[in-house]
Length: 199
Picture 1 (cartoon, one colour):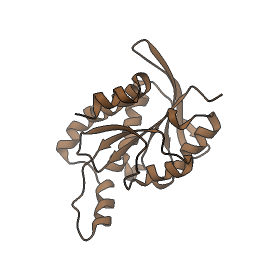
Picture 2 (cartoon, one colour):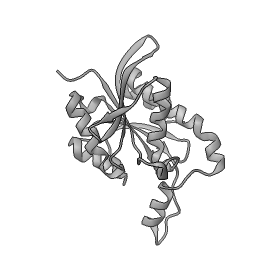
Picture 3 (tube, helix red, strand yellow):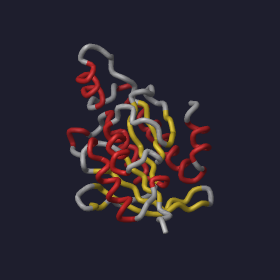
Picture 4 (cartoon, one colour):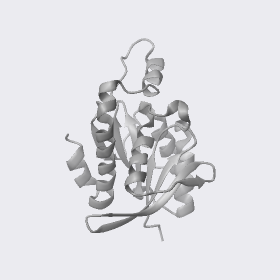
């Protein structure tokens, strides 16, 4: 029988060099959740930091694992697939939090499936799980200027840090992202989409 646990995955790159960068939005949101849910992280096979617990919200209890892969973004799927396999968690019980350049800063979109949209972390998870039928909480970071050096500009952009105005708004934005994850777990995907996608 498949596990009743949720697996909540925050995507990012490990190491001080990447802290606070756009590409680490998933890590930052996972940190908000870890504080909110009083999670202590420990090592999972050298692939990820992993914590577990029970979230209580609105009279409901949801058992969860919360993880931050240590594999670097492009191999995030190795960590996710290892945890799913070890704890027998179905893709439908997985929620991945990640940065998204196709959304303006501050926008959140909740979805299941769909294309990886050029996001290497999502592409890796699709490949490792053999499906894209898991939920995603996409946190907008806006887009770099597109030009002749588009690839390098994109890399510099996602590995760059937020300007001061956005840094002031970041705490509220990450809290909204955490709320979106909780909504998926407790209310289901359609209601979470209704609540967050239109904002």
